Length: 208
Image (cartoon, rainbow, N blue to C red):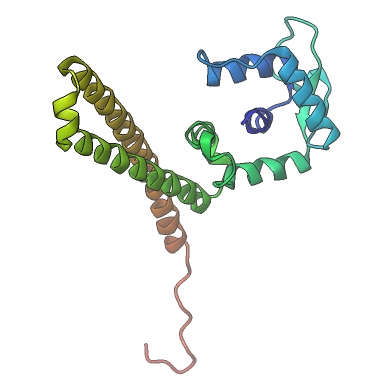
């Protein structure tokens, strides 16, 4: 996850290391924060892999407020960024977090790839939503649960289940809005391409 976060930010500009940390923590926080040691180790690893390289401080658009090394993404790093963006199988436990990061940078991808990622996430949301709804129904209809669970605990459990259901409904609605935007842009591109297509040439001798 951190690799994608760092490379995605460097797709825009070369950055000071401390700004990378600040931006990353702004994206993933406040529940989670990346400390300086973790970032330093990651930047060293990325540099050794040829994914980033030292850069001239003059190339970053942000003013310097403290001494910090500046890094830029390499062509190999860009290839790795696109690879990570299109990966939907690695780190399944972090899939929702990873998609939230990817959603910030979809415009780097062709529209067809954007649509693929969003539709994949929609299927993921629908699967979890159906699962949570099924759990609530099973809990509500189970006679043993109703008989042997205290009213307060039963109501608290159902409230927690409804919270999970509402969460995935919101995720699904957000994903659908992303899909609608991408589909609209695809249609605009298709209409624009069709309007620029020259009319077919008349065959010699064809009637006027």
